[in-house]
Image 1 (cartoon, one colour):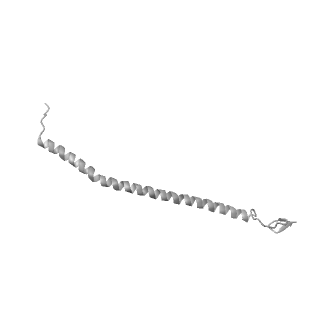
Image 2 (cartoon, helix red, strand yellow):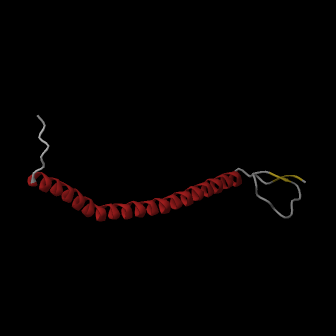
Image 3 (cartoon, one colour):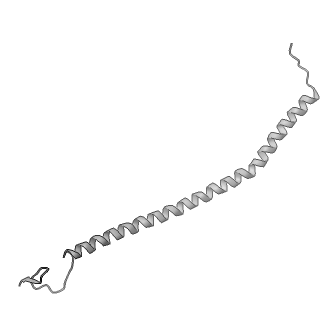
Length: 96
């Protein structure tokens, strides 16, 4: 048979469980706020890191272009003179 009577101990046990659950949720509220702030700060740091990586990629590209220009100059390409009066080679003037 099913006992349908409610005793005082049963009510106190139920209230104790509810009180414990509510106090746990109340105490975890501050922890959740702290974790939320930490995640937000990490997001800001990641955005700053993304800006630094982008700047570094741009600088890398500029250095690559500069190295290419220097190599072109070493091979005699790209040097502009104001007065060109003939054909010039590495050894000097070739033709008039």
